[in-house]
Image 1 (cartoon, rainbow, N blue to C red):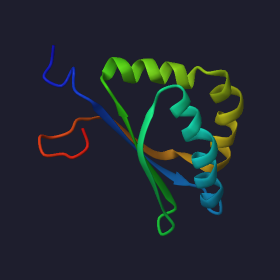
Image 2 (cartoon, rainbow, N blue to C red):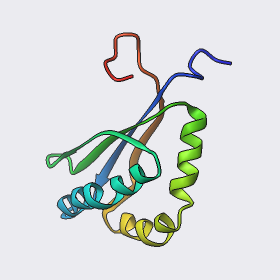
Image 3 (tube, rainbow, N blue to C red):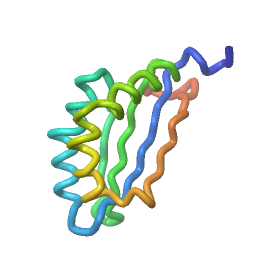
Length: 113
């Protein structure tokens, strides 16, 4: 067992949104995708967007690596994701430039735990 194995894990996702799609993306995330993910147990800590860089950034929290794997399976193998969400993502998100860090662990002084 590693030192971090039973500690919460945070995941930072940073996306570039296609020109002209940022407002649509933010609304869709707020009204459709984040509520869907929350309904299966994902915890979204926060989400932000930048008009200057046409980016959307969000952070999710998991109780453990096992929890993250379980929730990924529940979300990304779900019929809604495969049949409805994935095509919409392809219309707005530049998947080639996205960045995800999936193993962020809070330091001792972090207020997010």
